[in-house]
Length: 353
Ligand code: IPM
Ligand code: MG
Image 1 (tube, rainbow, N blue to C red):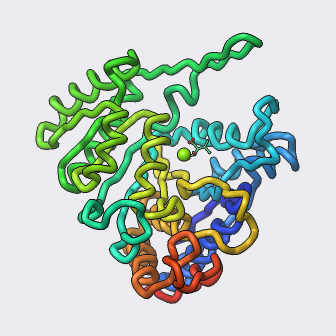
Image 2 (image 1 turned 180 degrees about the vertical axis):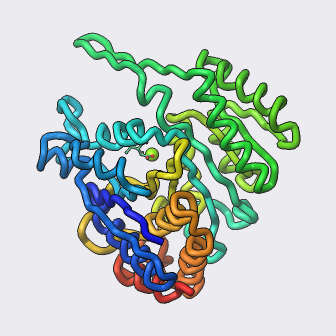
């Protein structure tokens, strides 16, 4: 097949890991006979420097014309003045809302050889296999903001439609997995959460009676994620809770450098990004872990291009590299050799079959 992919390396280690994702996609193209064309565009801090805009019009046009978008990371100390008029993160948020990718899928998969890299006891990590479905284009991230010298406010709004569509996506995923959905909210305090819970209960009773529904308050969910992570199958939650809980969940795998994400809307065109940030302290050093980016490229193959076999081949190659002992610094145990970003990527490409 032919596919057009917009590549947004962004800031910090974004370019390091975007390069890895591109190399793997190129290798998949050669191996399986596909033509992937890449159009590289600016986003985030580098776009502010170049064009004064974290999401230039040319970037939006390229993304809208593409079959899929791959993003590295945005942000860094150079652009983090809290009083700056424009910030790199605004580019990413605007891109998510422009592309209407409201469903952010964050699978949490444990590689058995890496249990030692997690701060949790190995027996707690047995059988952990969950996917967090984070609502991505609503809630407090996108509500009206105000600021004066004495106060500030961020408005949190959810509509029935926004909750219905994300709960349906999560419930359908649960149906193809272990049939369990956990909806996370803060219904004891927040009105938006009470709406969330009512809608989730209704959709699940009316349309998914076969799926087991658990409801948790977000503070309790944060605790259960650590105390009994293997009980979770699919978690669905609002934008900010999903942001926080997935950084927490990444520690089950031992490193933020392992977790991929796919952001989808009503069309097949999606946005794919590792969940980690731009890690400016190690930018350009060729030591960042490319696994999250490469696993995001696998999700791109699966969800936007419909290439399930190729996606599985990439995921299998990551697991094989890990299993063969390939480690970047973030997941290496003491005394283990540390591969560079490029070496780790080459190791994964070698295992593509
Ligand atoms: C994420 C990131 C972003 C978010 C930032 C960079 C705006 O933390 O994708 O999880 O909060 O959504
Ligand atoms: Mg985050």
